Image 1 (spheres, rainbow, N blue to C red):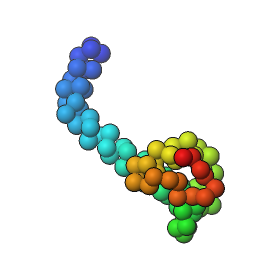
Image 2: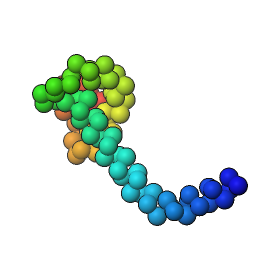
Image 3: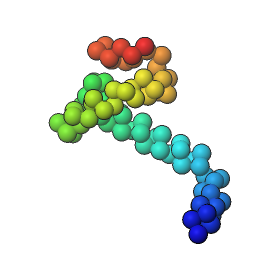
Image 4: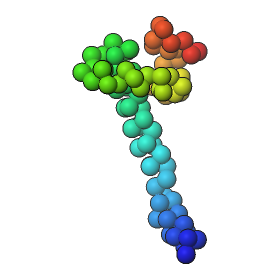
Length: 81
């Protein structure tokens, strides 16, 4: 039964896999902007809550700023390139 379920799921979601991946990437980019906004110089009313998430997004920072079209890190204190 699980094979049938997996086959049906692949049949229905297969054509939209790229769309789902792009939507997830957009959501992750927005999350990164929200968390990094204070460091980027954008006032963030929720910075008190997002500051503790900074260590968890540092690993993804290089990929993010390359996707945003920035060759070098826009932050002086984070030099990943």
